[in-house]
Image (tube, rainbow, N blue to C red; front, side, top):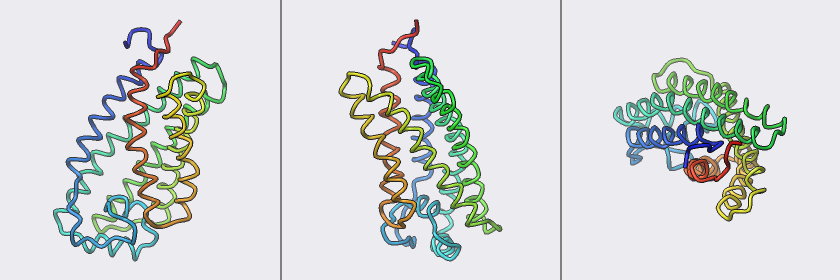
Length: 222
């Protein structure tokens, strides 16, 4: 299954992505009762990432009990490992597509995950500072957050462009799902409600689907 698979490195890395993601979700799971969040938000970490102002950030953090704050900090610490894993995974996928198609655009698109990695690391740093009651910049947080999410959407859209050319039903469903990410992300940039969470949670579906694809793609190295 893996032998001669052009997506072999991505497939193996994808398993690591799933394992770290599961660990992060278990450690960072927060009881939301009593935590103030903007209308439309139900997940504290996403409410923090998409916070529209320092006042809003203060309301969210100020309403958290100490244990919830500690859980989010722990989850964000694990996310520092997760961001390395998922961006390596995307790099290997895009690099493999370049090997198959020989299209130069994929050679350059394979660098996009490294931009996402830096943005996610900056976002986490700003969150660490905010949760610890240290000075942080809401503008830097917002910029890093949107570079991360739009970069992810662009990466998946590029992958979807390749997948739609295959003949398998699963590939086409995954491709069409990736096409939703960029317009949804651009919409979410100008919104501040539940659409932000819908956009973010879409990737929790896309990553496992893409990992499955890398294991069973059937694309072989010559």
